Image 1 (tube, rainbow, N blue to C red):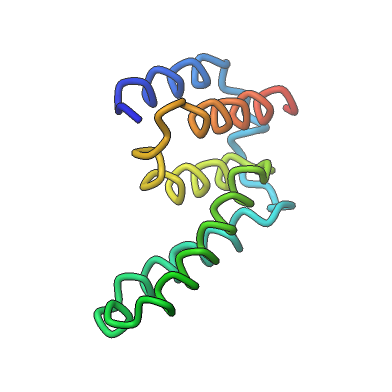
Image 2 (cartoon, rainbow, N blue to C red):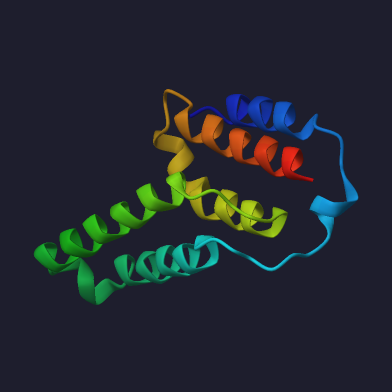
Length: 117
């Protein structure tokens, strides 16, 4: 994914007026934070030099991470903080998003949060 495309889509999502109720901290009601923590933990393990020599173990962990990334893409954040965490966790995967699917999903999440308020 090109950086320009990502920022254009996010700018469209950001065009929604800021509503105080969506800016305030609210309790999280989705699994976004849990999945983000899992992705970060798996990323650390995948970059462990000891794991680099064990291809089967590395592939198993990479497959598990891929499943969690897919689940995070489908998970709708309940708060702006969750949306921010989702974007940060998915950022490394935007590079492979040639069709712009991830950007579209994140932009939809932003619009949905704005409409709730």
